[in-house]
Image (cartoon, rainbow over all chains, first blue to last red; front, side):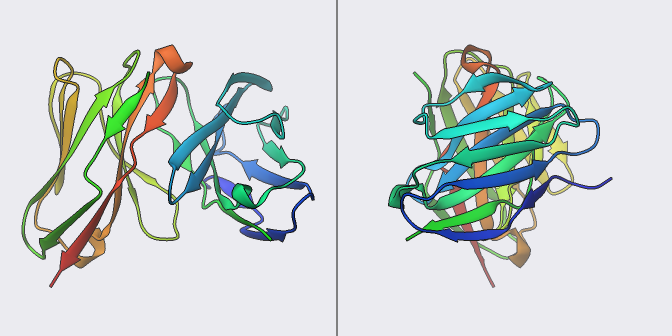
Amino acid sequence: KAGVTQTPRYLIKTRGQQVTLSCSPISGHRSVSWYQQTPGQGLQFLFEYFSETQRNKGNFPGRFSGRQFSNSRSEMNVSTLELGDSALYLCASSLGDNSPLHFGNGTRLTVT
Amino acid sequence: GQNIDQPTEMTATEGAIVQINCTYQTSGFNGLFWYQQHAGEAPTFLSYNVLDGLEEKGRFSSFLSRSKGYSYLLLKELQMKDSASYLCAVRDPGYGQNFVFGPGTRLSVLP
């Protein structure tokens, strides 16, 4: 069974640009969550999608948005990039509320 | 509020046993999970406790005390490849069933 796939692995953008990250969950997993990981803040929850609906959202500005498609694939968008958005963005999928998260390898975003 | 604490760094010797502690204060509790993350890689799931007691999985064991808001991960017969960060996470129904992660403990295994 294929794991969680994230593309691209690395991305370099400049301030003010926008970026879209993609995530394909494990087959059969309908819940997809996004996390930001930085050395100073650790893993911070961004949002979670289940059956194309955003179920929960973390404490991030509106520049961070996402969506989920009918095949459970998810995208995350960050607009008007800031230097502080440089981080590892991790996508995770799970079977349901009593199941562990399975993470992808992440997208490392660098904003210059 | 939600707060999870872990030691920042630990060092141990190959072949030894190490215990990584985690204390949590969350608005709700629906399971405590341990993840391992090697540098530059994704976190991988290690263990899960929802009831009090010890769960054993090979060289790894995890313990939970819900009344004390406390868990530990025990690693036996340490190997060099166990050098990694270990993340404690609580699934919180008061947080939409989402995971609250601790800061992680960076374990270095020395020869």
